[in-house]
Structures are given as C-alpha cells and as structure tokens.
Image 1 (cartoon, rainbow, N blue to C red):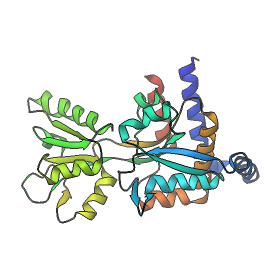
Image 2 (image 1 turned 45 degrees about the horizontal axis):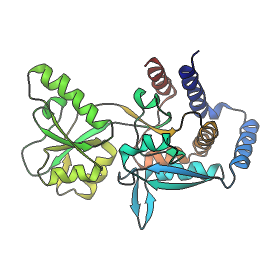
Image 3 (image 1 turned 180 degrees about the vertical axis):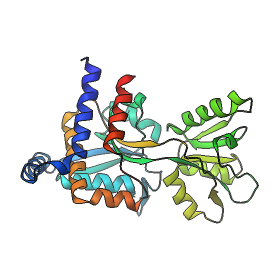
Image 4 (image 1 turned 180 degrees about the horizontal axis):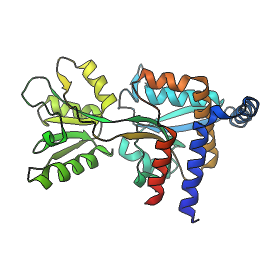
Length: 289
C-alpha cells in the first residue's frame, strides 16, 4: 500500500469508527471518552471558517453562530477542549490549513476527491443545491436546462462554479444551447445581491443557505428549482498527518452522536446524516483518483 492509500485508509477507519460508536461496549466507550477528555483538557483548537455563509456560519452580536459553530462547539465541549474561530474567505480555507494557519476547517466545505488529495475530511452532513431568483419577473427555472443561456451568480472557491460549468457543458452546449455565464462572488450574500440588482438572473447555492435567504427576503426572492442537482457531503477538514487533531474531532463527533446532540442539530438546520455506505463510497472515490 502506498503512502496516499495509507492516509485514505486511516481516514476511513477513523470516520467509520464514529458511525459504529453505538455498537461498542458501554464500559469501553466510556473509558475511551474519559481518556480523550483527559488528553485534550484545556486544549484550544484554532478553527478556520468563512463567517459569511448563513445558516452554516455568520456573526451575531460579535460572536460566530450557525450550524458549523454549534457542531464544533459540541465536539470541543465533549472533549474538554475549546475552539478559537478565525474568519477568512472561503477560497483561502484549504491553503490556510495546509499552511498551519488553523488546526481545523469547518465551513460548509463539500467533500471532493480533489480536496481529499490535499487534506483529510470527515463527512458530517448531507445536502444538495437550489436556484433562487427575484420574485418579480418571468424567469422561473426548475431544471438544469432552464439555466442555459443565463447569467448565474455563485460563491467563489466553492464547488458551485464547477457544478455550473458541468451543467453548462452537458445540458446546454452539448445540446446546441447557449452556455451558462458564471459570475463568482466572495460571499454567498454578495451572490444574492447580484440577483437583486439584476446583475445575475439567478443564484446557485446550497439549498439550506438559500432557504434562510428566502426566509429573510421572502418578498423579494424565491426558490423555483425542482431539480435535485448534486447530492453533496460536508466535511470537517484536518491537515494530513495531524493525527492528534483527527482523533480529537473523530472522538468528539462520536460523543455528540451518542448524546443525540448531533442528530438534533442536523434536524434543526434541515440537514441529514451521511450513511455508512455513503461514507465508504466517498473514500473509495477519493482513493481511486
């Protein structure tokens, strides 16, 4: 087994151990948890995120809030550690953790084979995408083909530009239709603003983020898409070779799954948990690259 495959195998074992936590003997699990808490007591973990992507992360009264913040705080509390959040733009997150600017990244990053060539990722939620447009007007896209020939806003550094380019090539250009013009913005709110200012016909983003945007701007924008687009999995990012942090996060995620906090938080934000088979498929795909 070469080094690359060994790293993937280690990541897979650690992540699947989290999913199988409930099958462990209670006494052994309690011993492991207590030992992890002792080893990580008073440890401060620096966490990189783009705190401009509600409801995943955003600022409220000067403090980071959102799904990712709640999950990370729960993980830290369960291991007697604490999180120090560092705000940076989305496209700087992977290079930042590789450059040791932070220990962990949790910021709605989708797990992809390309990213897993650079960093380790622990899947922790499942989601998809949607399209939002202005309520006024006649453009009401439902399917992928409806995006052809349109200007679509999205967030820079995410998977969304790549997904839109794929739709453009396969659903538009390949069928003799005009391609999609993709406009990239530093933050998700900026992409929505482009729609409101008529700089873009629609915004393509995570469905959970767009649901919140519609809730706040219900009189101005709406989700019209019915296409499920791409099933994607969010991943907690850890620098390759940082075994101690990987174990801390894996143990903490296991702890909050056992306590029920994890499932409650997923439900609160309208997200779902990746299955064991889905996680196996994620790592198999990464290893094959």
